[in-house]
Image (cartoon, rainbow, N blue to C red; front, side, top):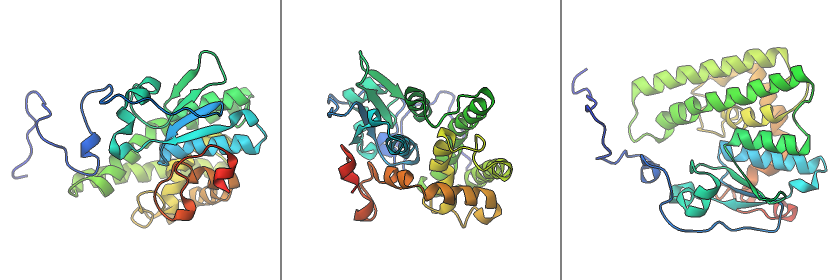
Length: 278
């Protein structure tokens, strides 16, 4: 290959990375500015945005409320990651990794911070005793798929999605590599869902919420607009599962929370009570 990039002996951040997220892509952690996070009246405070990682938590909270767990009432505050809200001192105190979503549980003393979406799902499922089996085999299978999602999604989001949608130039090698991995992951799911209605077994769980938020939306064309490119008709069991979950009222409500884009009917930038979703 002519004019191939040769990495320097020691990498330095001497040039902007380019692309949509260049302004927030940096090689250091910690806050960039002082700003406290808002705190509402509900027991749970969520700081998020309706990305695939963000909607995992709002879907679960809406499912818990639908099951009658009033302690799952929450204030959902919008974090605009494109504007660097996740680098405020207040947000970094809740999540030192500066990624959404982040949760603060005010129902316990001292208040408990919870970060990383998988950790938040597990924390809430255990706190309310819902959407996570207690029987050992089913619980372990559910956690298998929850942690599969946490390990697999970076290849889908930071890999396939980034190079297919957001990179400032189309790089054939990167798109081919990550598309192949995205399709392999869909095949993993299709094989599991051929033998089981849900990922953990017979019952809907936090594993389905976590995986659907990425892969269910992917095959439905609402993430990356890539359903045709990925030939998702090759994964009929994933498509069946994706439609079943998409039809759930709590899922539909959760998708609207912390969403400041799209059709106005779907936008609920902040949520402080069930009335905000009416």
